[in-house]
Structure formats: structure tokens, C-alpha cells
Amino acid sequence: MILAKLRDRLAARPSSPFFADSLARPGGADRRYMIATSGRTGSELLCSRIAEYGQLGFPMEFLNSSYIAEFDRLFPNPSLDDFERYVQSQFSSPATGVFGIKTDWWHFREANQLGLFPSFLQPLDLIVHLRRDDFVGQAVSFELALKSGVWHLRDAFTSADDVHAGQAYDPAAIKAHARNILNQEYYWRQHFKQVDIPIVEATYEQLSADVDQTIRQIAQAFDIKLQPRRNAMPDMRKTRSNIAVEWTRRFHEDCEDFVSFWHEYRGLASAA
Image 1 (tube, rainbow, N blue to C red):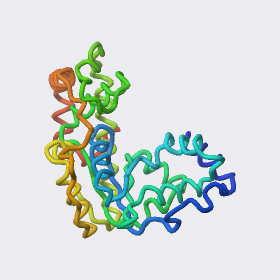
Image 2 (cartoon, one colour):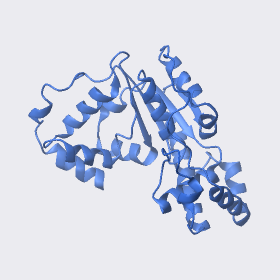
Image 3 (cartoon, helix red, strand yellow):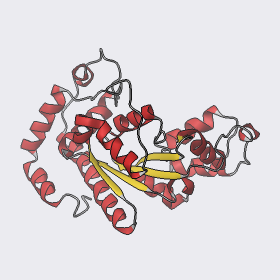
């Protein structure tokens, strides 16, 4: 609903003169990939590390209404076309012509239904499917982030345990998040069957161990030799806490049948 209202507002405007001579790459990107994911999979870690290389674009959630609303707020009366051209101009890598976008299933579906930003996604040269093996831990992480309002940690002196302290355990809410996660995985899998696009499979657990390995796979798909990075690891830190570990253990005990069922049928059916 919000995305549709933003589309209608920006689509009603002519292109802004502000952007007439300011877009370095008005023709858009030459090669595109999409990070297909859901919440709390480590996608922010992956995207921030990709940006540090500078050769594989600067992927962000460009289909998210908050990004479009902020663009509308910052620039003088931009149009829908201005947003599309600006994003491809400023967030693709000039040397390689590669552009990346990150999205969950729901934003991807809504943007397609509204006919928004086809040049972001057509044609796609690669899909990176990012998921989390531990879907219970993923649902717990989502619930804690939602309750605490803290989604990412960058401050080395901030403790995730301090951030999560005092939050109330709610198995029903965690189960709802888990169903959402499982549904998105199912719908992504169904979509992949309908398109003839190379897919790189990656998991939160793999990123946690070595995020650069996944980035090397993306670069290899585009036949790009990555330049070495000075810093060994990105600035982003996991928000894992002892509270999250305890909630995950409790949920396994409280909802044993639910967890067992979806370990067996994950990806084979929707969890609606």
C-alpha cells in the first residue's frame, strides 16, 4: 500500500531538472544481480562487505518504500524515473558496470505487481539466494530486533546482551516470524523454477565463517578478479546474544512438533 502511494506520487511528476546533468551513467548498469533473501540472514553484512570491494555494485534494498521515501525527502521533487536512473547511475560500479539489489520476497512481488523499476531486475545475470540454516534462530533474531529496535551493531563497545536484556520471550510471535521466513523461502524456490538464471546459494552460517568466499563466487560469475581488501573483516558485527541462544533453546522445547515438521518439509510447501 505504501509503495503504491509512493509510486503514484512520484509517477505524477515530470523529471526534475536537478538530475538533468548529474547522472554519470544515464544508460544504467550493464550487468545485474539480485540478492534474494528474507530478514536476519546476514544480508546487511554481505552488502556492506560487497560495497567495500567496489567492483560488484553497492547493493541495497532499492525496492523498499523507506528508500524511495527518503529519496523523495532529500531531492527537489523527483519523479519515479529520476529515482530509477539515479539508483542505477550512483550504485553500479563504474569500472565493471555491475549493479546489485537486495530484496525479500514480499518487496520483490509487490514491485513486480506494480510494474516498478524494471531496469533494476531485467535482465538479471545472477541470483544470490541467501538463507539461514537455523530458521528458529533466524525467527528469534527477528523478534529480538523488532522488540529492541536494534537491527545491526557497528559499535565495538555495544553488547548484544545489553541490547536484548529485558525483552519478553513470546513463542507465538517467534512462530509467526518462522512461518514468514519459511513462506518466503518457498516462494523464492517456486520463482527460481520459472527463470533461467544462474543461482549462487549462500547461508548466514557461511557468511559468518567467511563472507569473502560468497563474494568471490559472485565475482567469478561475472568473471571479475577482486582486488584485495586492507581490512580483514567488515565493520558490521553479529547481534547474537546469550538471550537469543536461550530463546532458541526454549522454542525448540516449546514447539518441538513445529520445528520437526518444518525441518522435514522446509521449501516443499508454504507455511501459511
